[in-house]
Image 1: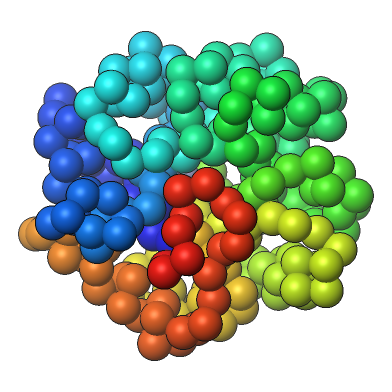
Image 2 (image 1 turned 60 degrees about the vertical axis):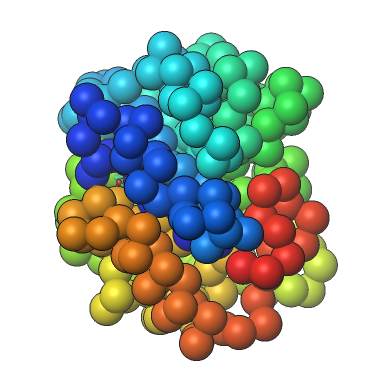
Length: 240
Ligand code: DX5
Ligand code: ZN
């Protein structure tokens, strides 16, 4: 799965920017993005401020691409549910910010979204393996959250490999997502480590043709891991 991040898009033209990655046939089956990654930042959990619920609600009405909301905010226990109720396909909260992450996952699922848990580059995976039984997606950050266009931190691939093993051996059922510094030079290493879903901001929206950039990233993944797909996850399809 490829999830372009609109953090690197033109915020005054979000509907057009979503359409630019929807693919010729619309949606993932038509060759476009599987998810649209939406970075919500509150200037407290991270030193940057982006957008919030009203923008997500409008975006939801402006595109058919399922929204992948990445909440880099304090107190997600209070705010995350609104994004699920707004129709986001996946709502990801940071384990470093959540107070009661198990209840939070339950509430997100009850509101009809997939529940995602994100870990920063310096946060270990092991303490959260049991918690992850309650989640549908794991977002491994491969840059410090806060800004697009940073360099990929390859050390985090060890956590991806661990997560991949836990999924492949049936200990966890979740989609492994990576976010930060994904481009033509880094995506193959991430695919080899076992990533299911690749977030890419500047590599997509910094390209002359964002739609082509999505197709090119997908092609790199296909070459590296031709048999991988995400079973049973809404919006993923069986072809990605
Ligand atoms: C960073 C965000 C990312 C960002 C990635 O905090 O979570 O989603 O958009 O941008 P690139 O792909 O440029 O590293
Ligand atoms: Zn993100």
